[in-house]
Length: 493
Ligand code: GLC
Ligand code: CA
Image (cartoon, rainbow, N blue to C red; front, side, top):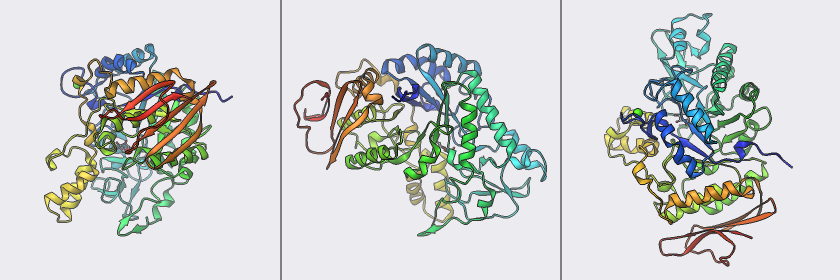
């Protein structure tokens, strides 16, 4: 029988550090705040947390632009706060994985400061990707050219994201060694693993720079600027280092939906799992699609991560549930009874709602601001530019957690349902690691069984007009809509 790892047995919770909990009253979330809320997470049933970047950073992209990889940004606390967080979490049986951005550094990072000064042959010159002329039509994932002219260097550098996030050159051996050392630093401190940011974007193949990305309907596609030959080898080296420490979890963000692209990143000697975006970035609630995806992932032999929200997208309470509580309860039931590793995003259990953006002044996220700038440069009106930016901005889900809403949960509150679901998952091995049987979906309903440990649990979810229509017996959880109709049922079969 397959032995399951700790991370296949827990529910994770993503903490977006700047807006989770403010521990010192300056209005910004911090590590002290996380420590204060560990008991809340424990009570919820969470077994692992993912901390978004907390390292020193100019915060052009909220910390995904690191200027010092071995410290804590003073706004978020200190290294000793980090140690205390880790120790407290571990004492409570909660593991901590940390976000790590190895694709790019901040333009304020000392390596880049040196690199732009040096001539060819200098130690740091080759840490980044410099070209005399713009070599291709590649665009940044945040809009606009991926090449930025640097006066000091008199050359162009490559940035897949904002110009303040300069891509590291992973075909330079010294860069690989530096990155491995950074990982070792945090592992030595006791981190339980990493969430590797945009890991399939590492630039490992300079010859790819000579290839133009295809243009479809006037839009430049991202083809040669990701999943380059050599990325898997780089991942292998990272994995080797990380797994030379026992019990570590290596999770990579691979912004793809296609199983064939995802598969090569996972397995022994590679990543333990990936954030795949087939379910995560669903645009509308679609039970049949969810059913198809679980069948597909089963067939591909992928043990997936399960999530509907993160700091990069609109909250699923708005995006998928049309702010209807019963739908949020059904999606929670799916997340916490399907096969895979659930990742809850802070506040979805309350639920927090999307922030409302009224005008360009409300655009804080760099992707939204970039989009706005781009449209203005094209001569569009403020209104049109704002409209475009709204589609791209990620401010929606980054509002401060409203802790006032976490009082003793009423029995039919969403928080209560999350708590009950986590309790079910944590106490039934079949819900965590059991196999699927009887997957069935038609119209807006979805059904599956989780089977293992001599038990069989059936999950009935009905997202449409129809109700669940089977005997309500051997019940583990019932979910009703506001009118008392039975929309979800979890029972022993
Ligand atoms: C990842 C992060 C996102 C960030 C980007 C660039 O997608 O989740 O927030 O902007 O990488 O680092
Ligand atoms: Ca603070």
